[in-house]
Length: 430
Ligand code: UDX
Image 1: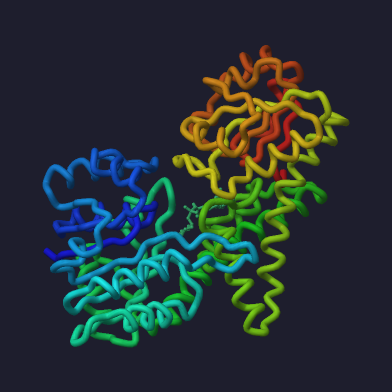
Image 2: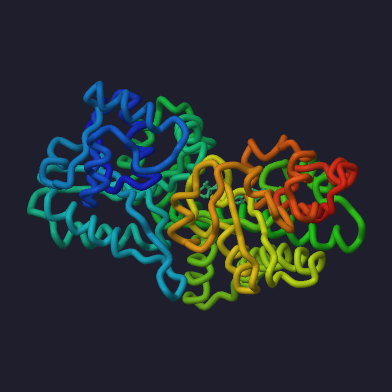
């Protein structure tokens, strides 16, 4: 049992805090947003993440996790302090580090004993050194601390199981003994710990996310070529993925990657590289292809309908991927903005993201079911592959629609079957 402090209760912080509590540690989470703090204290999670609510309740009941906005009490007796605050995209594409700086400042001011400070937020290479300086500049005398970079690889929608079943634990530190102590903290997870220096650990996170984004843009480029040459990208990906050197994951062609990580991290890595005098041309292409994947999807609709002006378009799925209500950088936003800009009216349904979506897309008509979206629609667009869209009653949908047109941005339907049911059907890359 260890005393752990987690600064920031976003997706990463809350998952980390709750999971470490579940492993039997005593966790104090610091959250400065009073509304969020009230929600958490009352036992509710402010985000939708499968399994998180149950774990939160269980560990609150057991007294293993508490929430506070007070650094002084949170840092008492703590051996490990995780920094898990947001690092959003700033105007120029670089990561905005103001929250990391502010938390480092507060930790420095309020630490009263030796501790290990672990940076889990995705931060530009070199940030660990900066955090080190800020804490050192604010620290009382005779207290020592070490900085460890421990990038997270949690996916939204499966963050809890990702936490408990990691492929590896990456730890970067100049103080190897501190890194080893953080490795020991993760020992119950049974994963290999990769211990390296601070900057290398920070780079591993960016390189991993950029590589995964590259795989997605790669397969989206192949999809485009498949469409022109009459091949099926889904089968191509299956054939490629069976090669153990390639592997089957992150080869689903579609309307591009979104979310809080890939778009931000690829851009931040691009910015870091360019600022250092490199020429990150592959990263540029990855971003361009991702943007184009969305545009091409709308172009397909334009090709079928002639014009979008005056049409009624139904959109199924709004979150950036299934099993989350997260709308950050969701492909649906770019697609719906383009549809509306050209005079289409849009109605939409998403199992959990409609509340979040309505703030970003206020002029969309939100429906109670997928079938309501189909009513009177000139076309139906699948943008997020929620399970409940996979076996819709298409005979009913066909009757509801003004024109039986389905654009499947995630390739969840069989093209032959859809055509046999009388739909004009277009997937991506097939
Ligand atoms: C990602 C990383 O996977 C995780 O390790 C990191 O810590 C945070 O970023 P996340 O953003 O939650 O996690 O989602 P992920 O499941 O990786 O999907 C990202 C985006 O890529 C989604 O928009 C998804 O639809 C898209 N995607 C994914 C594809 O378009 N094709 C694929 O084959 C896989």
